[in-house]
Image (cartoon, rainbow, N blue to C red; front, side, top):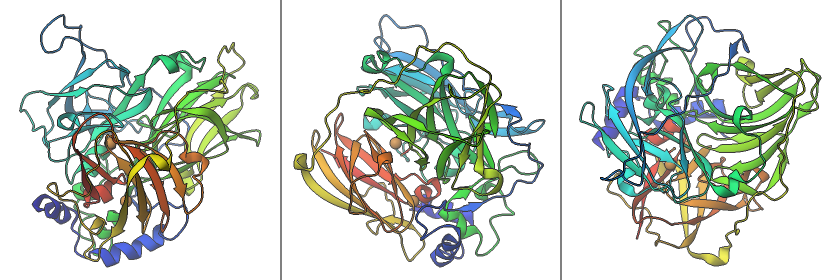
Length: 503
Ligand code: C2O
Ligand code: CU
Ligand code: CU
């Protein structure tokens, strides 16, 4: 409670919920598919789009394998959370909070069934809590919001058993009340899990497999990231500050920490592992070629790995926390063609995301098999309990789940280990709903069948205003305290989280 109200104080939330709802109305509430939140203006000149090359995050290398002792049998990685200065806008130094000095942090790779230990030192001025999003992780390593790693308190080891299928996971800060500002400052990166089933597929790989972390940011005149709680000029404008409760949006689109980057590609297939790592921004992505055509996405995977079969989609809607694994085929593009990844939900410069420049033909041995993976769809007959979770703004201006703001001691549900439950999610707004531990399949949306984007195993789902989404969740792996929450980080920080105990 105390922590929550100090966060409220930091944001300067004098006006409360009514104003938030009103501004929310202006920025997208009630529309079927908008982006909700308030966009902060950058205070320095911004680069022209597609002038900065895309880079890929560095890959972390594990320490030498231990033959005995507590680390035997683990792949051990070590990383220090520390302040760093990065050149994100050309010629401008931006102070960030980083994992290992970069934003995004290093990409960790794990293999299904081979446990990883991640040893983290905190050299930041604030406590942190690192969560592996999508991980089937014991509670003590899950990055619970109040399970803090304090500055200079010595290293903490997070253990990830990785008894789970290949998937694009990611890690990020999860500190109680401060996930929004701490992720905004740079505390996020990829964690890719591989397995034999996926390795055996002839998908594009190596240079032609691109993990892409999409995130928006704004910059202050001194080059730092702007964020309401860290910017005194933003926290004392009545009526405006409470709007940040709806979500903080930037006016610079970053991909892997580069503003509106470009990438040269050959006229071949590419695999894009897309992650919406934004605090609040939603994307509807499309590929527009300079010859006037659109290129489709062939979706091969979702949050939790491969789909059973590929599906072709003209657009992809990504809500914060979601991942889409897609293959794009540039082979019909002649040399010199430019293909722009655009966000149809944004206006002006924020419609631009990333541009591919096709250099010319090259050999391509990749293929998209018609059958990608075999897994059994969950059926409602398997469900042993039905529960309802309602995501809503309370009259006191807190974001709540079933009418209650988050409280670390509270329990919203007690599913049993090894069972499947039907969870009905409803909301008053755009809420990307994420479950820790449990992976799920969407079984209905708005009273009808799921949409194509809902396919596969997921851990985060787009719940739109006044919509009912039903999921079948499987509670496997570990007993203990986990959470579900809204992955709009400003909603999360404003108490839109709930505990469930797996018994
Ligand atoms: Cu990616 Cu609990 O969050
Ligand atoms: Cu998570
Ligand atoms: Cu929300």
